[in-house]
Length: 478
Image (tube, rainbow, N blue to C red; front, side):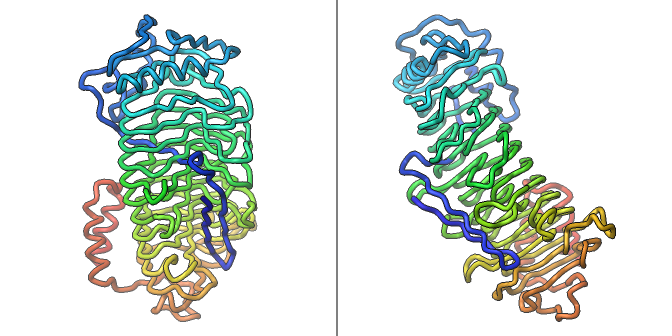
């Protein structure tokens, strides 16, 4: 399956092309699931629960060749050694298969370093199975250049938590993630993927899953295709009603295809490809996404798509982009390419480190993929070094050079203190109340009744920070 992502800002083509090989090229994600009431696994997977390392330490290593549904199996009773030398792949396969055959249960991974073969585990984490470690002390270490994922998860109501995966900086020519997932109602939480190589987590579609509080790091950022978290479709099944929240990613970012979903409170540092957080276009099934409270900083490089790395690149229409921060990226801080988005309360500063780009940019890709109808409310874009010679962020706001944008509304934004000027309007049709000689002033435009109704609904949205909801109420009161 070959996918293309095409973006543009200031007329620069941004083409993202990669192959996701047959069934093996999936993407990873998480969501909370239902467990047997009162079980240790259920308690450990509650939202906000602490890692259940105590459950692992306290579990007896008594062998059970045929566990019952809901049982706990320790990988060491299945033959794992965890000495960092012995190949423990077969022991993990045995433990996971026994739980899958039983209809579910918990596979406990005590403290140790477990060597996993290059082909990864052949027994997936199946429906109702929970793979649980002790955090930084439960390490799965790839033995050689990966020829498959270390962990495959396939089914519903499963989880992977409190594990560390060491991918040894191997960068295979094809997509070989540390974890590959699909299914509904699952969760990946409190895991670390270190020296990730090309892909940390890949997910194929699915509903109601959660990827939460994980740390994924790439030793050296690369200008070729790589992602900490990559979410795409499985056939015609897209990710829906899912959440990617409170993760930290170093050296690589998040690429998401799906709808009615939330990407919130993640931190992306030093991405080297594309952008820190990217949502794909309509034809990739993306729309109605909440991108809230994320930080993308330190994006560096002129990648294989001949594009400077940006903070955010958001092509999903009808999205809410709120309270995000983008700073010190080579390209533009926040690029919007989806129609009818609400961009509110974001701060973009000190970007354009090499490209002399903008705080905010809007793009026109084609008649479907463009930022027409988008509302900007209460955003800030500045260069803290202004008016000094070290300022790099050329404009607070600029639209793309390609014609076609229309009906973009700006209310109460602060685009001052940038290297050249507050704003640059290449498409005067996109801002009907601004003439070519008025490009330096903020636009105040009346909202249509439809847009007012949408803002009223957002002002009641509990997912949005209180400060953003207050800003919406103030805007509506004008």
